Image 1 (cartoon, rainbow, N blue to C red):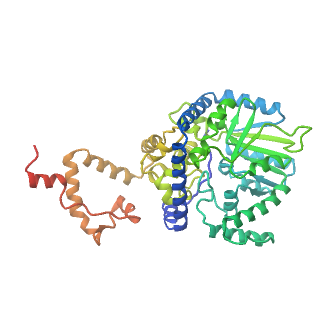
Image 2: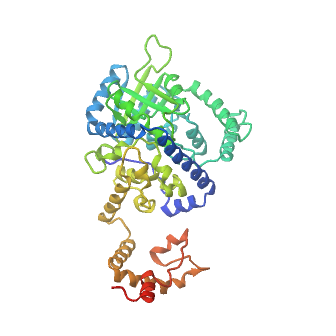
Image 3: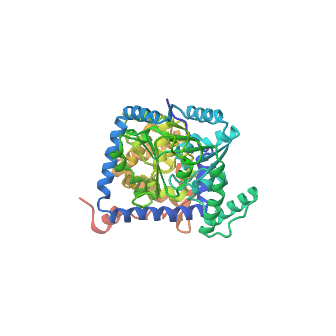
Length: 480
């Protein structure tokens, strides 16, 4: 069964133009992604064993996916032996229904959450709020975009597109609503102190905690959360009811496998040896314990994932959501995450969104948002063949006749001309003659037909008055 993902229904040109005119977003995302990419390079250079452990992580994840059902069965048995309950959700709708039933059974009125891309995939906040349940994100970035009523723009850093002035304005508005003291200034410390003060109230009042999960350890039935803020410790220990929503692909067999993979999200995503906090949830609160949930539910989400097993795209299930591919992508740096229209932006989103939805939404992703520069393939710590998959998705689009007829015919004629030296030289002569209708101030600034869209956001030098071959023939005599 195909998956379901929330999408931005605006047409691609509208999303593109909105992004290209958002200078604040471009500046913040450009600066931070370059810093994160450089931090990764520096971290690997200073850590001689980094590539060894990265390769170990790849092997662990590949093996875990090959034995997925076996490990999920072990995980389920272990969780339930420690007082938890596991729910298998085939679709997003199944997961939402399960979570709502749990919340309504316990008469939940307020929920606190950790950062979780899978709950963004479910649009869980909206479902809970529609059921009359208040929801508060406790990750700082997620808290910011929740106040802004926006979606995450980056897998690892949800509010990457916001600057301090915008965040200060959001906190000022929030302070008015809750009749509390606003942040003293736009200083990072002041903004953080405001968020800490506000979120402490939410932590103490919540009836239910909701987490995602970076990894699942089958051997012990453990959900592993890695954060840089420590909010996961509060979410998993203060409320008496806990729900963890995790994709089935997050499974690893045992603690040895976890040790091999746990470095990678921080090392490749932000250039740190390890995240600041690692939270382990292995069961409900014992009779002699004063913290932890009285009841724990784990929702294992499929939503199209298992249909990728035993296909050329199986390695996509090894993604650890580190964001490294986004940090090096030149397209992402220009248009940001929201332009992709999917909950999963960047190169991994270009691949995952069509696969999980069977091309039912956003079919433009493989073609419009990738230059095939291969930077993402080099950056991915899990050796996912992102460039190769994007090419294959483009081929699938063509085979399914999903490209516009004008586009298909234009590329077909282009390929026919450029398939031979004679055709290429003839096309250059035609371009040299026809370009002067579109040259302004020494640059080509527009073009007819398919090429017209390309020139909406860029220009280029005119075709040279003489090619190298023509110059050679004229100055050195005919080539043999």
